[in-house]
Length: 72
Image (cartoon, rainbow, N blue to C red; front, side, top):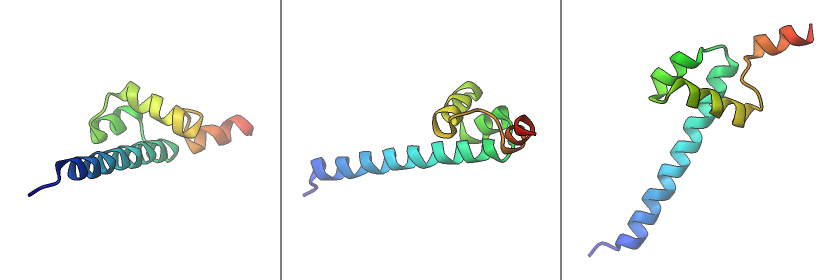
């Protein structure tokens, strides 16, 4: 017999871990210069959601290149 409490708990934990990994990948793609529209399309999220994730994870929505320009 299946222990549904344990199985569903494990599944929920795995989903949360995957969502966290997706957010990290979205933020990393932005740092590398990928547009929010492309990120959104590839990650199946709205481009504005991709922007908010990048800001939350990276503390900024700019790419590495854009950040360098600002300091030059």
